[in-house]
Length: 474
Image (cartoon, rainbow, N blue to C red; front, side, top):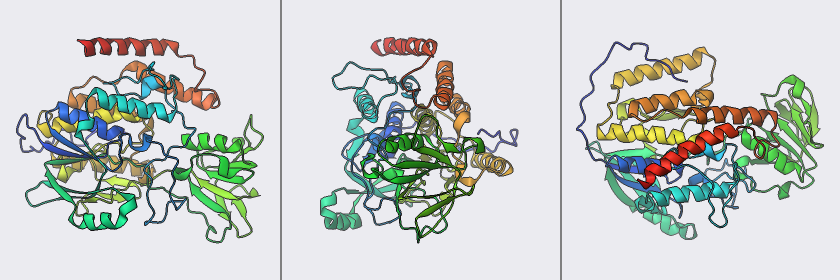
């Protein structure tokens, strides 16, 4: 949602930044957002270091069958697994829409690759590897370095403290954390993702309920649900996928959500063992799960497909930036905290979006502002814009936890950032393909990934990609 400045004629001058300037910039995370940041920052002439705790790029797209020792993700001492992928996951966006604009996500003839238009997660990881190789981004990444502290130091620079990751030698890690490896930077770009800290539904009576609970973060394969009665909470894309995956082996699957129309409650069309239910009202110690419409079933497992919390355990800003009811703020356009801008920024907080192109728009803006090529609004103007935005959410009855939910407004948001950074706006074919896919997903959820009728849009996309390839070769 884009809220205009309520006082557009009042402009407070911001101290001029040197132009153009090369800054030292730390990027936290080498997932898709971090790779985009690394590319745009280096293109702008900055000196970049990317910190990545794992041994490869990809972030959440780096699948592992490993899960956490706390299946619901509430134990703060648990060993965190930084991916939420399940084995059967396929993208819910076509590759034409999903890819970076600077590097189209086209099918390749390389051995072992997935040529499908809606490929599996392994193809996305391979694409990110190709992207990193094409632009030689790997040389900027320090693999196996976990950042445990980012904070301001006296000269207005940022200190980044990191430690070597080695889960087999935890005592050595603790000793290293005290001393760590400290480096200072002009700016920090936070790209650590938001798919590792689960949000859990609050259910009256859950402490006495005898069944098991798991969050979708720790779902990988359906086998453990053989012959079980499962209640799945949520109506997101992952909830749709996982419910159908589990139904292959489970006795019953009941999907509970606040968003189902009353007329849709009941057995899901085309399935013998999947039911749509109203939201859970309570659970009992005899194993019963009671829904808000009065229905009751007896279940073995509750699976929470209830999303994630933003979490920045390494970041110290003296409470300038906080996370309150899953609102990260105050942030101007979901990116800059006004009093710390442009030296601290966040990439990838918006959700219900096409992520990779959004990362590009955000990181182009950040890189240009840091160099001084792109002017940034004054602190007072940014604060006024944020206040107007928050007020509009409150007046509309939108909870704080939906602050970063952009959805259908994402292209307006992207084009605003494009205008700020001098980049071309979102292609019309990309917008239309996104909305066409959404309609197909709602009308034919079982087949939309393999049957489509938007060949005209595919042709427009390929024409666009061909022009980019010619420019690459030139």
